[in-house]
Length: 427
Image 1 (cartoon, rainbow, N blue to C red):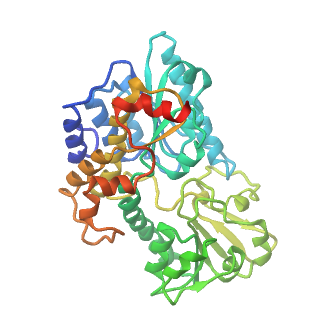
Image 2: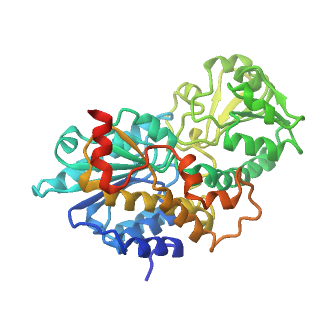
Image 3: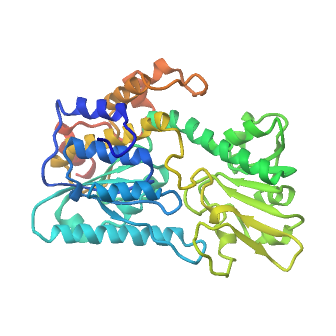
C-alpha cells in the first residue's frame, strides 16, 4: 500500500529506468525538500527502486513542511531532521543552515562504520550542497542534484559536480505556470480580505508577470523592476514606478517577487497609510531589511509581524516574509501538475546514479539529460489537461530532444564520457 499520493508518472519513470540503471548498496541519498505529499511520493518511488530508507537523510523547509508528511516519512524509517524554528524573525536561512549541518552530522554517524559509500545530494536552495563537510568531500564520491536557480548560484564554486534540474528546459518552461496559479489563488484571497486600493508588484519575472496580468483589469497596479526592458511586456493600465521606494509610498499592498531583499529601512519615512507586504519568493529574503527592525520575540519565524514606528500607520509583513503560496498543507500545487517537477527530480537522481561511479569531486554543472526530460513530459501529458495554461513554446517543440538541449543549462554528458569531460575542464 502506498503511503503517499500514487504518482503513475513516477512509477513509469522508475520502471523504465530499471531496464538500464541500478542502485548499489553503498549509495546514500541526502536531501532538502519541501516536505509535501508529492515529495513523499518521490521518496517512496526511490525506495521502491532500491534505496534503503535508512540510507536516506532528509530535512525540509520550516514554512512549507506538512506535519502528516513528516510523520509518514518517519514511518518509512527515513532519517528525518525536523526543521528548526526561532523566536527571532529574519532568521530563516540561519535555521536552514543549522538543519543542514544536523543532516550531515547524521550522515557522519552513518559513515563511522568505515564502509565506502557514494552520496547523491538532492537539494532545494543549495544550502545542503554548501554545507557538505570537508572530510566527506575528501573521501567519498558525491553528485548534487539542484532544483533551484538560487541553489545553482549559491554553489557556483561547488567542490562537487551538480546536475542542474533548475536550468533544465522543462522546469523553466512548464513549472512557472503552475506556481503562478498557486500564488494567484493565495493573492486573490488576500485581496478579498484586505481590499487595498493600490497594489504594487516588485519584480517582473515569471511570478510578478502573472500577478500583474491577472490583477490589472480589476485593480490599480504599480510595477517596479530593475530591468526596464521588461516593461515592454506591460499591460497599458499598469503604472510604472521609478524605484521600489516610490512604489512603496504609493501602494497599500506590495508583493515582492525578486528573490532578493527589495525593502529598505527608509520605507519607514514614507508611511502615509497602512502597508501590507507579501512575499512570493523562497525564504524570507524579500523584506529582510524591515524584518530585522522587529525587536519583539515571536512564537515562530513564520508569524505575521506588525511594525509600528510611533506613527498612526503600520507595516504588516505576512507569514514572517515567507512565500504565501505555502501554507503547510499537503499540496501547494495540484499533484497531477507538480508531479512533472517530481519527475524531473527523479530523472536527476537516476542520472546521478548512472554517472557517479566515474565522478570526481570537481566543480561542474551538468545538464539534465534531454532524453530523460522528453520521456518525462511525454508520459506526464497522459495524466493532465494543460489547455488552460499558456506556455512560451509549443508542445511539439518541448518533445524534441534538440530543443530541450538548446534550452537547458549545463554541459550534456553521458556516463561513459564523464571522466573525459572533467579532464577537459580541469587539465
